[in-house]
Image (cartoon, rainbow, N blue to C red; front, side):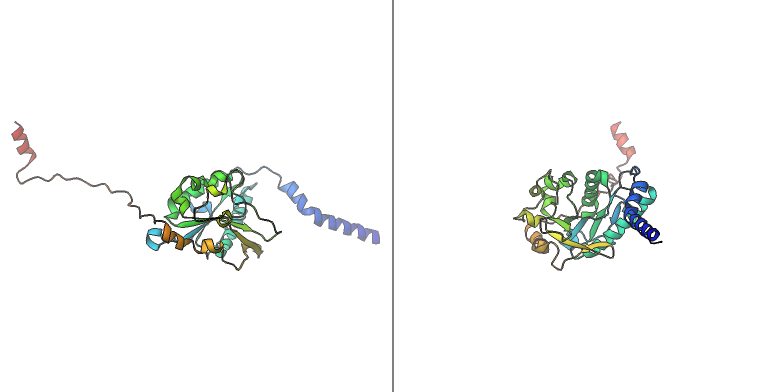
Length: 273
């Protein structure tokens, strides 16, 4: 009897230990689902967006947005049901991080395909600049090194880079070494950073995060981004010109010819004769 119980105990331990491995191997080993490119003009291509549009710089003055490359927003599902589950998880996680980052500003968190991260983040960033930013300052928060070309416009556009507040590296307090770089090793961080940061570390401050109720949140008491981010709007006010309000598209105007009394088409025709 003891041998039977011992054997059952061993089988139970093996089942518990090997169960997750067996599930991943047998049920999650299929091909990844081929996802179409996201259309970042639509709300469902974002894990979270501000509930209301923040005031543009020409109305409300300098303020800061957060572009969040959040934990769980990179998608690599193997089925439609898994895709729906991943999107729900990404939205819930982004909302929790948005609550933590609210002290900095409103949060924009794009979904992206893990196997097309560079193209998707570049498209999301361009959509943000073209339609959401409206001259405001912004930072980019990430939990991993970002593809260099996804934010290449920061290197090329001095005006855009002038109101960029830097990268926020979301890192867990594990070990004493410096965490990941905000941009992958194929590019120089200094090419993305605004001139007001004398040290590169000021351009990519670490923000400690931790887990609460199964979700990642900011887990530090110190101001997010340190002195550089705290004083960003004041520095911009003193050193950078605000974007002017766009004039918008000009409406078509009907041009009406003004004539003197008696000046008719008939009288003109008679004069020509």
